[in-house]
Length: 276
Image 1: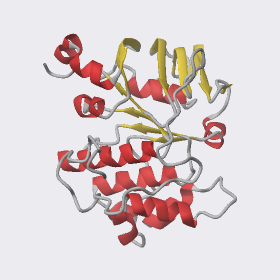
Image 2: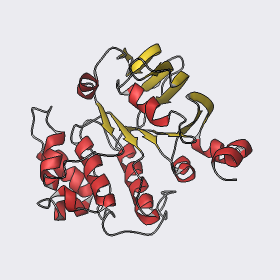
Image 3: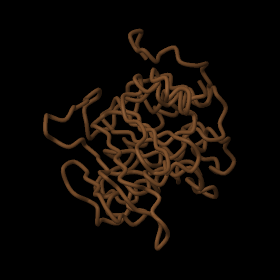
Image 4: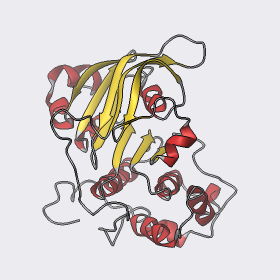
């Protein structure tokens, strides 16, 4: 990363994650292309006024709104049971909405299945069970491209540039990897779809602080290629440091919505959700 990069000195470098050749781009957008919506237009992705829950159970989300612009990072934080992962799953079509809508790039996709949303350019990485442990690293990446009908080798090389350790371990069973390396496989597999929107549910759960910092650095790098990132994180303070937009949810409702920087500076947010 360049010397002008405000995140260039974040954390120590873990050789299992560090990218010695930054700057690779995924081919559907230009590197560094970040498009702000014009006045009156919707963000690139918005789950607007969402109310709903699972099956016939009670509503978990209550008039909740989550959005992210092109090439930006949006982070959802809040206490346990606040509906953070539920909000992301609602955006991905994994639960029934009783109110509100989901709009991607100007198209209402509220009635589409998760599979159809993947075809529209959405990729979702769940917190657990997010890799095929009995397959090799490379087979996992190939599975991520199951919808594609074009050549995937260039995209795979870009994933290997982002996560060099995966190239070294490409013939190894994914179940033999460390927790941080498994998360790299999961993110890499999602990137093989060439998504426009990458959704990550607790990507740093269970990893060391050093690995967490490096994963965040790689997430920043992915966003710089123009891919929008929507992320749920328990490590709220660290996640808001890299967020363009942050959402604090409480009991399925928006409690605070602002830039990551503004939320970090908000005394009530710091006291109630960030440990002071």
